[in-house]
Length: 399
Image (cartoon, rainbow, N blue to C red; front, side, top):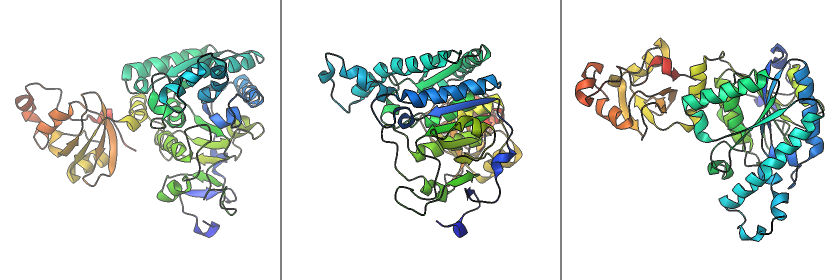
């Protein structure tokens, strides 16, 4: 792709207008650190790189910025400890159990490195391991948010990772994608002003820069189009499970929540401070929506793990999308489950186009029974009544 072929949703680094200068310095940031950045592609931690990042974080804290870290690298860091165990040959390489053991052995190594390096700059770190269900449950979501707010209030830096011992999907690359999506979900949870993904890659390019010498760095993105998706089909990290595709998934969550996101190389000098000062580094994903209220941020946080979906007719779609109405059973055409009352579900048009996500008031089998019916008939059809709406407007988030 050349300069004269650029689509309106993004600009390359040599574009005339620099939208990064429109941003104010953030007061709360989430920084995701990729496996290759922390290990230099090896089976041990790169303490020099981690030390440099910690130094930058210390500087940001002194300027009054709250910082949270989402850290990969536990599996790679566990290679050394595992090699020293007497029964190392009893585990079959490549299995989930093998990678879980590596993660469990590597987590203390990772935290010890962060703790010792942070101590040199007189601040404390706190570990939090999170599993998939923690951000889907409203009560657990609030508990996580309250705990992280408390840690930030006392001046600590929370360091988070998916709990690989119980969340096996992340190890196989099927859930958060090397913590990329997890970092976006957490940025949403704590109402961050900015999400920064740091790795070996300096940003999103028009094509794979390892193959195409004419590839250009994309300076900023305002919409994730098919062309942007195509640009992301490059190589994934050697050690981590996340590639550029998983970073675009993180960008979707972040942008839909009104939170800017940046992909940049962690090896750029003072990269965190420079980004927070508005300098043009890496690729910036610029949201076009305003910040959301807390409940709708939670719905967007859990949308990637939604339990099912319902398709609605054009009249209901117009009422929900353009008039701010609740979704009533009379507008429901089809149901795809299973899902339970209180789950997050996707609401789509008949052709599958996403309208939004919401908390369902009824189980999937109940929605199947009441679809196409007037709300007044619900007590008769079901024998109970949880309200006139399948999804109340206050429990729905639109992209």
